[in-house]
Amino acid sequence: MPGVPWSGRDLGLGLGLLLLGYAVVVVIITIVAVNVGDPGEDSAAALAAAVATLGFSVWLGAIVLILATRKDLTLEQVGFRPLRGSAMLWPIATWAGGLLIVLVYGMIVLAVQEATGNDLSRLTEGNPLPDTEAMTDTVWMVLGLSVVVAAPLGEELFFRGLIFRAVQARWGLIAGMVISGLMFALVHFEISVVLPFWGIGMLFAFAYHRTGSLWTPVIAHAIFNGVSFIATISGVTQ
Image 1 (cartoon, rainbow, N blue to C red):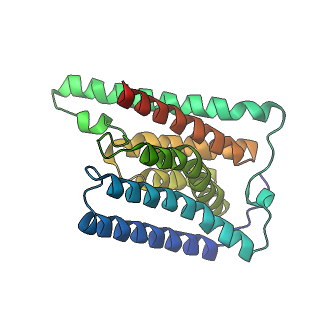
Image 2: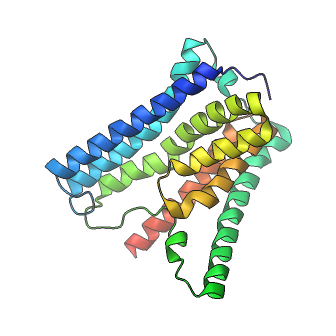
Image 3: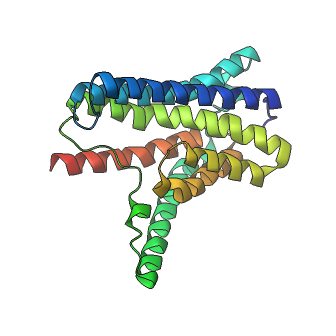
């Protein structure tokens, strides 16, 4: 992988802007809930929440592009290099690896549940999309754009393009994978996905490291989210 363009200051600024974006989203959703209605029951509130979710994903990518502009970096230097030769197979292999992580995690949780007799269903709920009468076609369209396009681009730019590369340059590959993967998992704000998404985040970072192109995790991420979104839509429309 080419030299890392990010300094410790860039990393700190990026994390600060991440927290700022999250705070703005929380404020917006709170205002909507108080003045419009519950996003789970009111279609206007659901649309506002979906737009806020889309905006947060866009903001993650914008953070990296803002930092890149300050340093006069090209998109290729940021990480968007063409995939060539055998590297073109990595996105599919990475997606398959992510799916395997989720399946193995689910099997382990079920095995522990059977062995202990405890109800661990809370740990296998995943990060489901809402399924209520408030979900109009427009809301689903905005969510689809967020989940399948904005999230793969924005999250991979931020967590792999910025966090992983900055941490790796200072503390090595393993530290970069572990820290960027954990942050990727935690930003989804759902306890049931922390462990599997942590593993997926580390896998995405490794795939980026091996191919030198952000397109590898972006495409794998888009396939992963797209399959989940289609499965959700299919369940809703049946």
